[in-house]
Image (cartoon, rainbow over all chains, first blue to last red; front, side, top):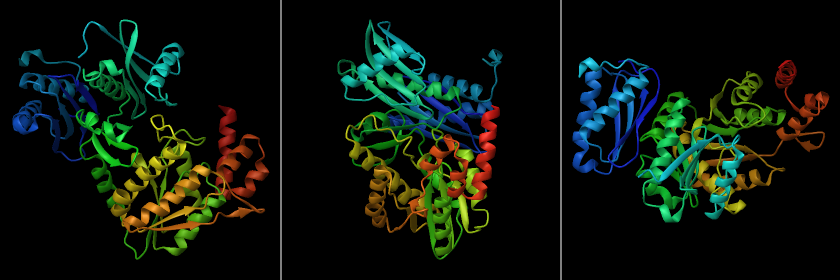
Length: 97
Length: 339
């Protein structure tokens, strides 16, 4: 999926995550993670984000992720939302699930 | 945590004056002022009582306050979330907060990172490598030379005084990087000012024009609502702006000299210039303060030109600005009349 403009999803509430995404000049994905539980769960959070981006076919994007202790399923949902918003895709393919 | 007891209201303070005055009174209780230029405000109520607020001014989050009774409940998180989403509506994803240094950790926990800290103010941004990426981008414009100078100007509008200062820097250095302050609260918009400068310096090929971006802080945009004392406001602004210039912007282009015009009219700018002499040499930079160019015995000032322009005294304007600016201003006046 092609990131065409910046977008935000999620919130800074406890147990949620806020993600902002921007198109990247190069066809690379860069992820900056801010989390109070980065030491314990940073690798796992990054893995969920990367896997979700891969599945959605995102290859040129820069993400700022501020995690407030979100579970994997929440992180995945927020990544999907922010990518769909930034790609201007309005039709979510429910059949995928 | 927002529960059913809380009620979130968002509004444009320039339109909803009733709610705006509620927010002003609330901020006053916390020893804060309501800043001008804001176009979006969040107010959180519990029953009828206003307990938290925050506002948005383009890409700057401002005027945060949470009632002491309701702190440590995540209300700031809620405010930042709402303001971030509002900013996203207008494609503003790179956001800034100016605050007291003691609030640093609060905003760091919300994904903000310090750009620079001064005695009474800290500037934070919501990007991990924002300033580093900016400096990196800027360094692509590096041009080698034995002496490389930098100057920052508003040019509202571009006068013979500005032109003289730039010519002087250009004649004394191999390379001059000229930053035009980016802010659209002046009579002339950033693009208009850049255009006037571009025309006025066309013959100087060692002068390179840049838009200042978000990291050179203009007088007009530096928020002072959380600092009471006027002198402290100037000091805070000067320290912050000059440290960013010396630590990030100057090294990217290997600038070792900063040129500035002497300031006979504005006390604020004069004090700012003093800080320049205090701060920049500490980072190995030389400060060159150049006496203002005079016309008929008086130093040329852009604010005087604006005044003459508004009073339609075009012949007086003509004597104070380069021909290129004069032609631009005539066209500008014509366009305004037709609008």
